[in-house]
Image (tube, rainbow, N blue to C red; front, side):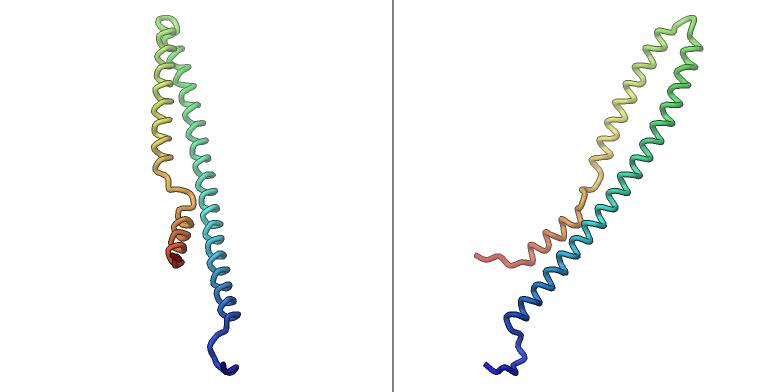
Length: 128
């Protein structure tokens, strides 16, 4: 074999493969990092919206309940209190059902990373 031959040797092939492997791993780590940041921001936004909704709802329910009980204090305060309790229980059930639907519609965390890793596995030839 001629030492001036321009064909790459085994060591050059290993280096090239190693660089490609490291670049692929770096891309996947960057993708996971980006998706983790997006998930964190979405979770914070969801928490803020839920907190605001709970606060406003509780204030409205408190004052509406007080007004109703005060309005019917002499004639039917127990009936009003029972009706309010049933209405609040029904609202709680409806909110739980809606929350479950909302969570079911959310994309899986790290879906893009998992898809990229699946594509990487398909590119690697299998030995029989």
